[in-house]
Length: 396
Image (cartoon, helix red, strand yellow):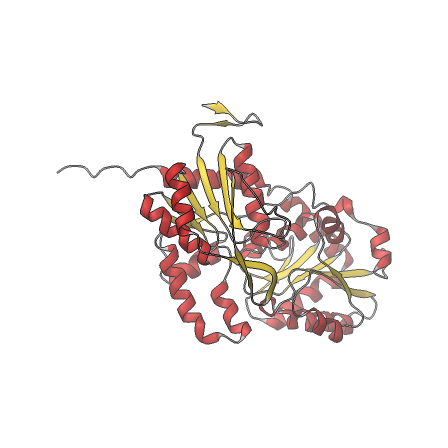
């Protein structure tokens, strides 16, 4: 039993290979989660090899036992994201020389598929993660006929691994209903020191045209069809009409293909573009009310980040919101798909200043306890279980 560099004791130090078509500094929930998991595993003394597509900032010539780069293709409709090219023979050569104890596949594209094939050929145990509801996205991009085919492929892919990690109970139930097997829960954490109410900025609010008495209605995320943004627009307009006593301003953090359309529809809104690190945390903390109308999330990291920053969150009762929000206590929930209930929930939060203050305090108190270390430890345990050979059947 050897200590890691941070002093954490480990019973077993693993050689883990992790395959993903997205990774920091790319900005999305999957990349954020994987960055946190990788950092945490290394701090716990594990050896980690990352396999991913080459990014713009990567050196042309790269030799590193802990990083294997492949070619990537742009993902249609997702600027800045890529599919990784199949790398079967490259992975076979690498893993025959330095065999990992376990493989974690985070994405199911060509790179992930080639990794699955290579691992099965070499007898390496595989754990997969269900990070993105791609089968739900097809309908938003005019490819509804592909939904059944894509669902079938995802089921085939994940059922060929030792286990599939899902981020929420609602996601596990949905996948079980569709025939996915061996599903285990791995939730998400939040950096409660980074996302904190103390980062609230009067200067930033002034730049948005707001005083401390005004209400900043915040949305953070990709500005894309699958995020159900028409409901965001309708909700904000209704709040403006029903609350003439308040000066409300809609603030959108993020970018995507629907940004120009939204700017035309919302001439009074503030579009902040992509924000990172402390600047992102400052934007969260400078808001008051957080609207999250998406129905396509496997988890929704932004919900937990908003709670940690002390915002009153309105969301549908699923994924992260279902796990972390108690309606009326530390946020407000609506039944999935009930748009009027979503709008009513937001209106309830604005009706009484004391209720809004109480909800925001409770939000921070809850999210402040949801750190990443416990999530990393759960991930470690899942990988250890995957590495453990099954017990032989008793002889009769």
